Image 1 (cartoon, rainbow, N blue to C red):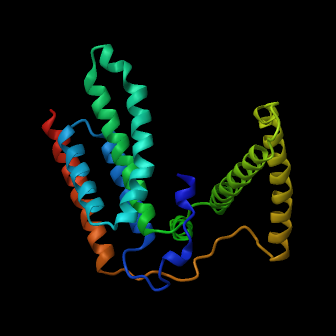
Image 2 (tube, rainbow, N blue to C red; image 1 turned 180 degrees about the vertical axis):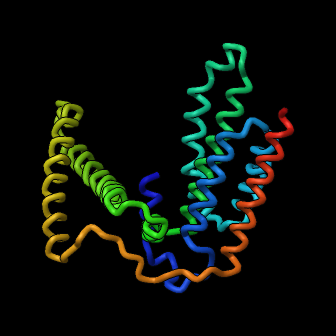
Length: 237
């Protein structure tokens, strides 16, 4: 999932028209919260149908990217909730798995429309502390880079195994240790580079987004979701 967050910015047009990233992020978070607190299955099914409709209009590679993220998480959730079936509560398995499917699916779809840089700008636009954005931004990027380093080291160890002694199976500690040393070196170099470039820890919003028709559509969808949530919850009483 972290790898999916780090999209190449060249895949996004510079003057891409559409709703603001903050509006899309707010709608996704609102929908996830409403689905999590919903006690009426009809509301969850309605959100699920809407999400599947959005997935159906995506391109083939985008649909494949969404499926690769969603399916493993859903299978893991179903496996964790499987004992509930034997304990006489099979509805919990269906409810929790469906809500996880909706939540992860919405984030995966959001990732297809908004780049990581736009997400960072959206967080800053809603006055999220710059320290939190800095930690989140550097953590995501470094996890991705260090994952590639560890994978390359593991592959190098396997390619150098020419004897019958399976020393490569005992090389996990060496790979992790080397990765740790590389991470320490990279963190020091990153700090020096940020100081050289006079980075003050702030994420200024250089270009303001003007509200357009797409933003209004997102606001309308959010209002409809809130009204539907209230109506379906009142039906439970």
